Length: 391
Image (cartoon, rainbow, N blue to C red; front, side):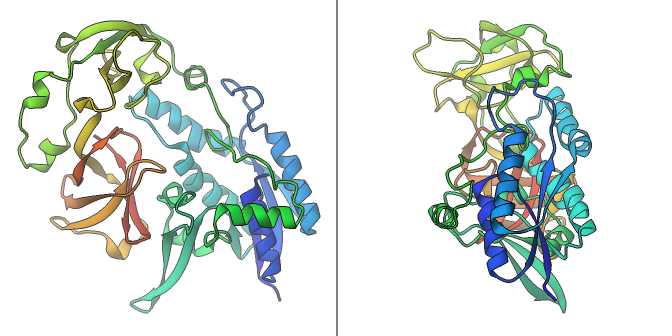
């Protein structure tokens, strides 16, 4: 009897080709489309409407002659992803909803719906790979980077557990994007020429302040420009991990007021657009936000020292090891290659576990270390753990 695989058909080319490959490999393939969002507040017109996605998903299922099902997971998505987003922004942190969507929805709520349909495995169109090995006589699942370096999406899965990976299949993980497009065209799949979706997972591209104003109120505050010569940058730091990871702390008196904003919680470190402050020799970037005092701090130019940090901290309760057998004990350190955002080239650093939290000290200062984002660390091409940047 064929092994049943339920694939998340999103209406995009990647999941479409994944479904085709599974069928070619002899699996009993079932397509399942999930609708996770209804509200259009803040969504940019014409972007990623769910009904188009469902229509394309159905066309692909029909072309491949596989059963097609639909499930509405919007209540769970709002509770477990969007409400988390609002809460994080309110507290001055910048979340990554795509990472949360994979952990909380695609490989949890969706997985349970797939099992109801008789699934023995669940597949997605992610560009990453999964490998099973045996450690101490037990199966262990490795999450590996996708073979296409331009499309590797392992970072978005950095919060998955061994139990979630046990069910997971990534049929296009070994492929390059042009090859995926070619197969879609050869098989006359409706999604062959569809653009890749962008923006927040299942919501689409949004005007973030408008989107967040559903729950977070606007409130006027000052924008302060901090000069590159600010005295705090010249102060040498000790080699203590806590000191190295400490962000720069500014006060309005350290710089000059250059404008006003509508709420510090709407903005994030490294952001350049959306504040309408001009007339400077170099572009202005946000280097810090203070949601308690409702102040945004900015600096001129890509090389402004306020944009760079040597280390970051992760609270122990926000540490996650995809490979628990590789977790560090208190006092242990190990070198990993690390990324702090999707598409960032891997950066070498040392992860140290302490009783008070984990610290990553980079070989080179990193631009835009942002609380609320996920740091993910790799051993070779295997993603072994991740954590939420606390500072």
